Amino acid sequence: MYERLKPWLFRQDPETIHDRAMGGLAWLARRGPLLGLLQRLLRLDDPRLEVRAFGLRFPNPIGLAAGFDKNALALRAWPALGFGFVEIGSITALPQPGNPKPRLFRLPEAEALINRMGFNNEGAEAVARRLAAWQAHGPLPVPLGINLGKSRATPLEKAAEDYLKSLSLLLPYGDYFVLNVSSPNTPGLRALQEKERLEALLQALTGYLQGRKPLLLKLAPDLTWAELDDILELSERYGLAGLIATNTTVQREGLPLAEEGGLSGRPLARRALEVLRYLHKRLQGRLPIVSVGGIFSPEDVWERLEQGACLVQIYTGFVYQGPLLPRRLCQGLLARLEAEGRGLT
Image (cartoon, rainbow, N blue to C red; front, side):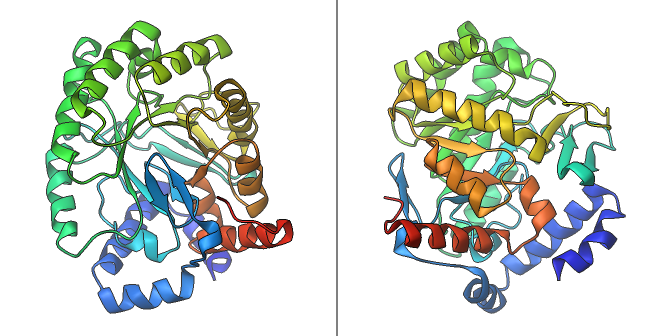
């Protein structure tokens, strides 16, 4: 069905279609009986798929990456579609409209996207109110991650205060939190990955959390190995719960569209895998790694898990493959586990 709809969908503006899809999912998320039917059709629960990481239980290792549901509009729809965890955001302390449109572009021949959204979101206070309202419907059946970004209007020197404001407002609602300093679409943000600036951030956020909730760090794929080594040293020193590798890339690798922004999808897969392998080799299991970037098939998921990831996230693959993708990934993973005669844990 989705393959038949896709040509029509892809003739329309990418952000317009995304917003309409989110509107439909938000409507669905508030329709209990219909949501239950969808869950029975699409969700695949099997104890062999369960993963335990940073103190949490994940029904399966397939997560929705940050950026799709920035404002937690469709929160209860994602588990029904088969996701094992959901990450909302990026959320900033101040509400902001993001960068001027157009800011989202498809590259169908490469199964890729370029975005320069710029952390468009309603702000931490509004999202906290929405999460409180969702809680009234009962606990989410999968872990909820909250991805935190820096407000565009906040200077780098006050970044820690900005992140702390968001974290304090959202702390009751997230099962884990992600420090996003790796988006290429907020001016100067990636400078927060530099050792001294990052140390100041980690010191402030881990000092505030005091271990109450897991804190992860999301990495850019464009860092050098030396820069990654500095980040790994800080991550272990400040007791981070894990790493997410990777965000979108500013590299284009000969792709025809020259729009500015972060590239995701199949062209990112090779670099995301390289970074995963490097991190796994250096860490030797000391920190869990969530792998994201160019994941489209069960074979992709298996490769990431075999190369050191404990969980994976999808975004662009979901756009190109459609809403059945989480179930197909779980089915393929189960088939591989049956062939191997084991589970994930």
